[in-house]
Length: 479
Image 1 (tube, rainbow, N blue to C red):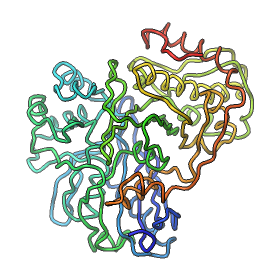
Image 2: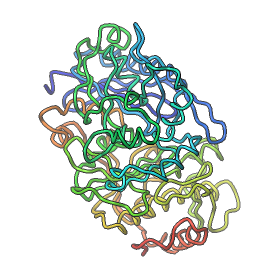
Image 3: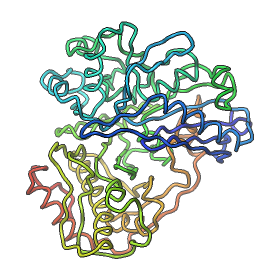
């Protein structure tokens, strides 16, 4: 099924839900989006799960209407990695929320994280995983301990609520979203005995399937609400970072991509499961059986929103001998782990334009630190780096990436996670790699012009991180 059918993809982000409908060659026929809001209070970050479904319905309705209501053969959804809640199946609703959605960066489960760290599952150590406080597993324990009186409760990820309502019955979860909930990425199963020992009963856990497998089919009620075709396949998706990786076409070993939004996600490809002694890097299992190593940094463009109200074209263009490590709050997850890390600036800034430039350059240098980290643990970093996310809206920032990273930067034509999910939905027997070649358009390529201009600043940037004790020693690969 290619050109005669259409495919849908949904991306549940932090601030909005985005939906696309494409044809079999990848042409976007329709788009839709709907806003999301949340509640932040210190280390807590929640969203109303019902708002996810309302936003998905609204975004899909806009996309399918814009596409002219074609016959849609399949849909896949991605969501923020590590966002979980408890739901129960009741008549008329296979995923009624019992709790708020605890978001990907919610860090309330301090005691639970300590318990996991003291007695981790052997399967995690074998896969190089070191569960962090913001991962889904500590939050799942936190939720269960406060809702033991609900015997029909089950754990769900953000996308599970949506897929359950699309098919009209409790949906299995994909191993990509379940990685941070404690699934064994090698076996593709739950280490049930170890999870039970930590306090998470097996009855609470959803069934596991690989990304790309069929979860069920769109029911008539969901079809009427969304504009999807009744009977369309609902395909198990992946996390938002993995979805963006598919859309970026980064599917070959040695290739890497950055998704630069509120925070920054690095994703790559390896034939063998890599192990990071620091525990900062973790790997998803791809639909084709390869490994997608990467990490989610708390650094990113969110600082622009906090300090300047968002991207400001009027402040672009200045080069300064300064860089800001762009954390919006306390703590960093990748390429190093430090709960006490805070934003800092090396170099001198005088006015808003200087501060703005220091943030842009700091994001790039934080990404360079990520690449140095993966190189240091033995992973290949070959050729161009692919860039997606909000950073690609600025030509100036893209060119800063090329110089700051010292390599070509590719910007895909359609780099949305929703597009990646449409590609995954369409893959089927043809396979993800071949489907992506057919459906993804050409990328814009930016070559570095003056890469040496950031070398000295980067060295000072790393020296400051080292002096603060966040990394033990300067990573290799610094020019």
